[in-house]
Every structure is written in C-alpha cells, then in structure tokens.
Image 1 (cartoon, rainbow, N blue to C red):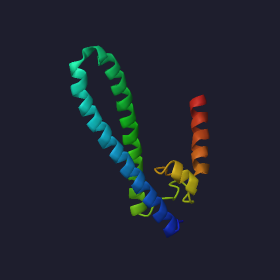
Image 2: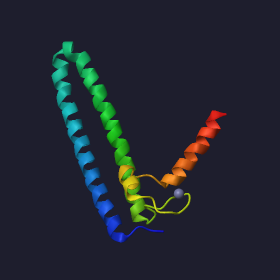
Image 3: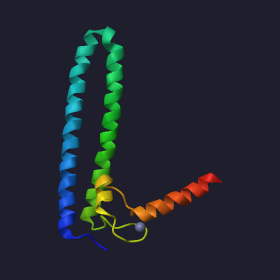
Length: 124
Ligand SMILES: [Zn+2]
C-alpha cells in the first residue's frame, strides 16, 4: 500500500526544509565555536564555563546530526517508494506518526507488538 502522491510530496517538502534548517544551525554553531576558541584562549578563568557551554553545544550538535540522519533515511525511503509502508505488515503508517518520527519503518500496531514482545523477553 502506498501513500497518495501529493501527501508524499508535502512530507518531502517538509523534510527538505527541516534538513535545511538543521544544516544551517549546524554550520552556524560550528562558526560560533571557532570564534569562541580565540576568545577563551585569552582568558583562562572562563575556561571551565567555556567547557560547560561546549559540552552542551556538542550534545546539541550530536542530536541535530541524529535528526539529520533520520531525515535522510526518510528522504531515501520517499525516493525508492517505501516511505509510509510498514516494514512488518505492509500497512500504511499514519501521517502524524510519520511527522513525529519520519524515519520510522513500523506502523503503530507493529511497534506496540514488538515492544510488548520485548518486554516479555526482558522480563524473564
Ligand atoms: Zn505494521
């Protein structure tokens, strides 16, 4: 079962703009990082604070990279026509679910089933 073309196009446009804004953010934070490098070398008292800021910045960048990767996965799935299909049962994945988690390959039912199987397994 495949998604209607216009719905797919809409999601694709959304994903592309999301990717663009994340990419811009990553570029900007890299530039700020390079700027602050000079600043903090001059004043070692602020070094600890700078390290903390840097830690937060690194975590944010890592999170952005993960989102970026997920968006890329989703865009590839749109290209090869598998986007929106559940890998397990072949049913359509709901649009809100795809928007919240574009890289998902399971419908909500299969996800819930797998999770309850997982719980039984780890509960033993
Ligand atoms: Zn399914």
